Picture 1 (tube, rainbow, N blue to C red):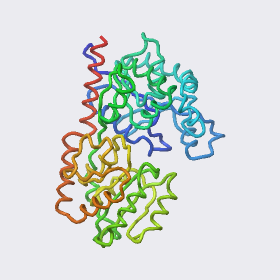
Picture 2 (picture 1 turned 90 degrees about the vertical axis):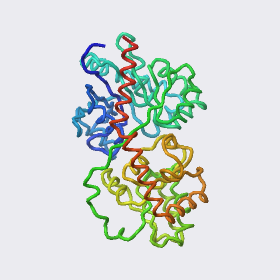
Picture 3 (picture 1 turned 180 degrees about the horizontal axis):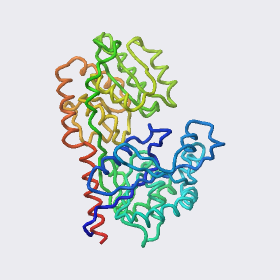
Picture 4 (picture 1 turned 45 degrees about the horizontal axis):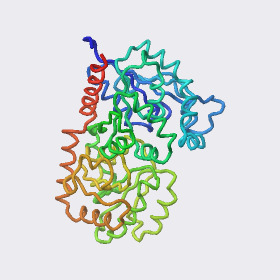
Length: 410
């Protein structure tokens, strides 16, 4: 390498858009952290092409109204070129098991733009979120154009399903074998990828988190939370998130803790099951379903809370846990998720078996019964974030990997 600053081309289709800033917030946070280092960064977020006249839903309008370029906080400029890729039903289900036909269509619409961007920016390395679709598009570039590239995976299911869908495995294998490295966000994911693709260079690179803004600590709790012990949860309402399990567990022990409330942020396809679980609870008056909230308001809720509980299973390395820990809160989580790479049961919170109402109830009861221990675990969690898991720290580690890839490709 010469002495110029490292040039990184960052591809992420699941990235915030001006009309939908709530999606992919962690991808933007990662890009902002990379941009703060001594590098040059260009972000490309391929966006579904939707004619404005056909944009009837909020999601479609976010695509149709998306500008070609937008500058986010931290001087991160994202380019939003259009392509013929639509991650919505029924297209998503059709392409999931056998992605190659659809990948080829998307690739043909994206490659000309990608090649022009590479020619203009002259990146040293390309960094892609997800093998499918972004990594696959980069893997189709001619070798003389394709820089060393790294792919980061973020979802257990997308990896695990390669065991059951041979065509999906074939598509991902093309990416893994051409990438300099495939990065997982947890050791469990790394093991699964290594089993599927033993010839690949598979590494673990955890996500990070921003520390809470100082002003969040200066905002007092609202009146309805005064004098309460707040157990907070925040998630997309999907079966895997285990919100009904958490509700039933809280209901079992609520009588012993009359000042405790379970505060639930979120919405989603499993909302009917969540509401049904609340309706069936004896202590439903101590359960607050507050709906979906913008990300800054979620972070404020983290600061207001006393602890954070989310007992979803198969969680890769959920950023929401990191956000709660950064706010100094102990967590309750399942013992099968990626967050267990970095936390210790009884030190940073409590871990429970997946889908266990009894174990979850016991963990909540223990948390509420030992306030001094609860505070100490929250302090331990916050210290762990500050020392090891800020986005800046993780960006530095990621850039070191990229520099290694470039030097070995020289």
